[in-house]
Length: 439
Image 1 (cartoon, rainbow, N blue to C red):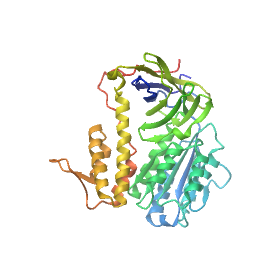
Image 2 (image 1 turned 120 degrees about the vertical axis):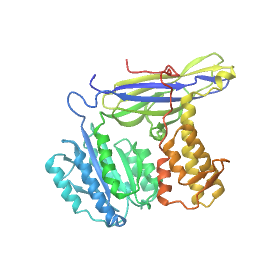
Image 3 (image 1 turned 135 degrees about the horizontal axis):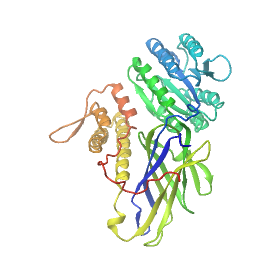
Image 4 (image 1 turned 180 degrees about the vertical axis):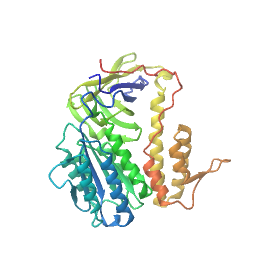
């Protein structure tokens, strides 16, 4: 399978644990490089474009949404299966009119554009129902890169139980990238969609930018070369994965997505891959060993879901020591990405405190977040924070800005999941020596 992407796995950790210790932390960097498509042609793909057509989308927003959805259809390569869904308090497939998905070509693109021109804004918002219909449509293409785009401008009208049940129903069946337009939607809701369906969530400040964003999402999906890859993690008897979190390019908790492979092993889906890199923070708990004893605390394999082929592998080790200098050292990767997770938490706590009127807590959290963003090289988040909090250059004192645009607050909320990659000096060796590929 030399025409497929080459996967590599780097493991960065400090293997040394103090006497009685049993918690191991490791940063897993997975990279895929190589051909974007096989000699047999591009991988099969299936796309569902979901457009919020609730009453609040009236006027210019529905006009821009129609144009963006049409641009997304145009960006599909020939042969890709697709459908367009209108989302209100119901989910309605507006194209194709027949069962299933259409195959992209000049004629079906024209027909989809005609269907979109008839789209009108009226009704409520039921995101869970929209996603369930997408899952039903995409289930007919199990071997494909299955992807959905979801656009909304309002808060979900379903109760939390129905929404959570829909996300659980759809998890592992397709990847969904969601976008909010305007300032009346809830970033936390789309973040839940992103976490459950291994996608992204984002804010479109100006509806006129929808078209470019939709095109970019489709082009990214068209670049995927492997439909589904899982992190398969083995832990020893009486051990367990405490958590597994994606920490770059965005934050996402994969812990609850575990699918048991056997008594000691679980698969964590990561979705489709093109030429890209992602970073994960793994925390494993194992029984304490004797001083000097070295064990394998976890065996990590990257597995293609379609064939079961192991494309990369590596070990997470543990060795007990009474040398405090060794056991208290934190690996560079773990330190950096723990800081990025702390940054996200500070922003969420700060925004929550501000909304609740607790300005002292908001100032403390957001001020600390601004300093941490600068220290870690997360310039994008630092710029977003500057619109909400200001730092006195002389004293370093943080102050909340008196007037904050709602759009700036949403941009900070949604942008806080984006992390900065750890910067490594050119030529610096891998600190773990844990680079692995299948072999």
